[in-house]
Image 1 (cartoon, one colour):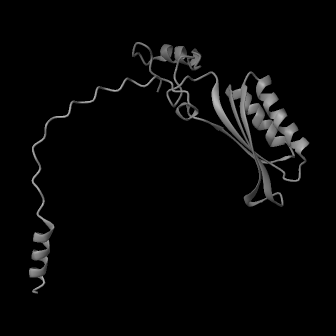
Image 2 (cartoon, one colour):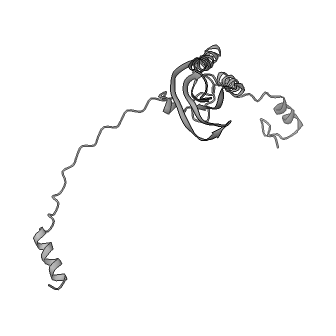
Image 3 (cartoon, one colour):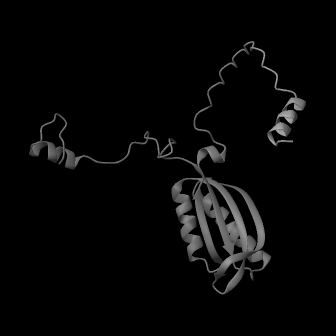
Amino acid sequence: MLVGVSGYHGPTSRTLLQGAALEPCAETPGPEGGESSGMRPYEVMIILNPTLEESSIRDQVDRSTELIRARGGTPGRVDQWGRRRLAYEIDHQREGYYILLEATAEPGALDALDRSLHLSDEVLRHKVIRLPDRIAGRASKPAPPAPPAPEPRPSAPIAAEPAASESSETSTSANGA
């Protein structure tokens, strides 16, 4: 049931609500409290065919970073892990060439990269992950200042524990010796 603005549930209120555009406001925060639009941090893991030459690997990395840059993003660090053994066989390959690419971009730019990597024959697998702001080093709100430490209060003297010789006497008498 649709509810009208003034609480009236007649046909007039339904037509008002059905005709209204239901687009999200640009100022509404996203699910993690950040902005709903704008540049976001991402990590892209790419596993390439291990039989590729260095020039082909370099070309694939260049294409990926150029695609991010062309869509208004900022490619970050490119970490080439090299050949690693796969957990299971993919396309009859037991190894893959791993590349980790960091970028900051609009969501649409990474959608285009995802499509490009999916269609590439050189790529065995890939995964695009959006990093939370707190992990990416971009805190959305500054941390509040720490409260002043409470002053230590003088404490009452603690009773001394019984001497070790007294406790050994009680343990021998308990054994019956």
